[in-house]
Image 1 (spheres, helix red, strand yellow):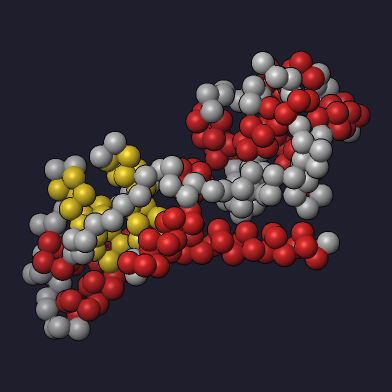
Image 2 (tube, rainbow, N blue to C red):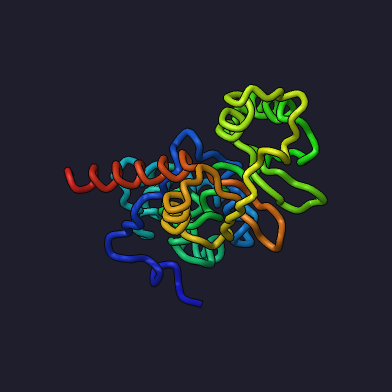
Length: 242
């Protein structure tokens, strides 16, 4: 197994994980670690919080491993040896930085880890009024239409406005199946965010279901993708200005 030091690049610049600081929390770190087969210990957390603090203090530069060991012993009173770093993060500094929230989001799976994978759905035989109530309660713009555990359509606020309200149809009588969008396009968890954005722009979709093993694993919205892209641009601009 390569040593921790061998996995460390000269500049330690991994581009910056584009989670908003307010969105990154310990539960997110735990999910990311679990995906890597890690169970986080107190020593993990010491390193994670140190790396995260230094990352933002130094505009996206990850501290080199010898600096981690020296600073944690001198400033954090939490000494850690190189051999411990190897055992704690078998994937090297890249893995440690990822769990700490300091690696650029590039895939659907990574984004779902941050935003959550909750999927709000409705049966096609329920009424549009039922859909409106759920959309309002969850403060979302679209629902996945699911029948017998199978995705059969998507119903959005736009569908309801154009196909029910503007046509003076009754939301309490009209069924979701009558107005839902049946043109289904989905992506897998390993798709890149750039690919998702291209699909949504080309098809003029505002919501994109994520399907894994024939089951809905999450939903991406256009604002989700725009937010990440804007953060990417802001981070890049701030680095160039420095």
